[in-house]
Amino acid sequence: MLRFARNRAALWIASLAGAILFAASIAALATPASSAGLAPFLGTILLEIPDLLRFDPGLSLVGGVPAIEAAEPALLVSARLILGGVPIALLVGCTLALLLATPETRRMTMAATVVAESIPLFGAALLVAAFSASLAAMGVAGEYALVLPLIVLIGFSGAVPVAVGFMRALRSHSGADGGRFARLGVRRGRVMRSDMLRQALAAASREAGNIALALFAAAAIVEWIFDWPGAGAGFIRAAALGDWNVVAVMIMTIAFLRFTLDFLGGLVCYALMGEEPPP
Amino acid sequence: VSLWLLPQGGQRPRDLDLPSGGALAALIVVMLFGQAHDVLAPYEAGAATGQALLPPGLLHPLGTDILGRDLLSEAVHGLGTTVSAALIGVAVLLVAGHFAGLLAAHRFGRGGFIFRIGANVLASLPALLLAILFSALLVQGGAAFAVGLALAPHAFLRSFDRARVILAAPYSDYARASGVSAVELLKRELRHALREIIPVAARALASVTMIYATMSFFGFGAKPPLRDLGLMIASARADLAIAWWTAAVPAVTLILFILIARLAAGPEGERP
Image (cartoon, one colour):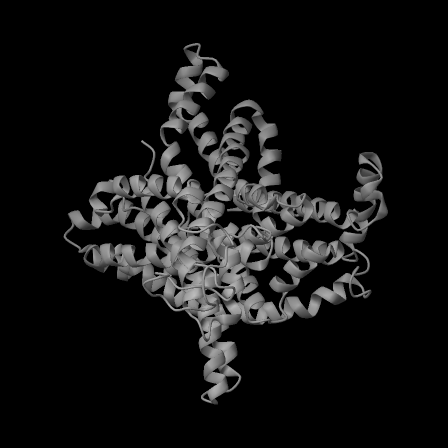
């Protein structure tokens, strides 16, 4: 366990260093040195690194306030939306994985999933936005008519990585132990149910980084369509306007969360399953 | 991430009864159809041909948009633009992702892990946001290239990790011990990769199209007067309440194209 944790920690540090370098390159675009040639640009990147380590990349080029102040409220708004979507993602993802793991329901579920995966999220969000706007216009529902669809859409988008992780866990479990149990006369469904909670927790922790990323990507799309002041829409706006310092803050935050979730999720998965998760 | 990547252990694609072969043929036909859009579409791109916002009828089978453009023709032209952009993205993805991952694993030894960490950093951002970032950094019109580059880190990681597993396998040791050079091993690996190129490219086509259409919807894709399916949906947004068909026609075209590409890719099996 200690060796595994040490390796994961080394990977976490190296990945964070890479993320800081990437964010510094983006923040350096906000300086006049970016158009003065390669050598001054590389020098500016090195100068930006200490600022980023202090989490102070400079001012927002659009708002004129510190970039961190410009990004923080948007990140909090997105965090609330994403946290709301997590239970839906876990519920739908685990259900989907169980349906896909059961031979009787697998084919129909797979076909439905392939069709659902082919629908771009922005199309679904556009439809839901039109529907909730008409509901709100009729006075059928209040602010929930706006917030609930956002969370549901985000949650459904996060369900796929949950299902993938859960199915992988079920497959490896039923592949190794399932065969042994089958020879002993224990039915596959019973094997699955007996170990369900541990499998689900291990899958969710191992895929935590992917789930968070899928939820954030979905949040970006629905925030843009519903004109919600979140970090995803803020990232798109900042990139379009060339507000590189804000983009750098968001890159660092997202990367930090992703790598930390991967690191912690890997440890939890190892502790639960007693085996190394895939790289 | 796709559920499509997870067939049951030991199950072949055929057991799933999903028509990969038929879908592949359909995909080729649709792509050729898209490329020949100037010949096949009833009207020229952007030509106003009738009254504004006509519902589907005999004269205009799929209706007209706010500027009186025939939606059938516009969807065909939009499909052509989307397919062309997606093909550029797929080419970039295959080279900068799959091929570069293989090369880094085979030719750079432990140094390849630096590239892997670099790819991991890029993959820590959602591909859509990374594509928008690259698109903002690249010159105007580089959206398709940006989408390919944004998806490449994920492909790089998969390709690199798989190649490292193969290189660490006993049969690679035997090959090296029997005098097979590193270059020859890479060539063999490439030959294997080329055998799988059609499902990999079809899968990439679905992913690239999805992200490119989303970017286009946000205004980072095709620039007017050139219109693709994402931009068509975005411009129909204002008329959605009164003329559903203006958004539904490009949306259904896009969904069908992505669906066909996904079916053509088939489930990704474990490599023998």
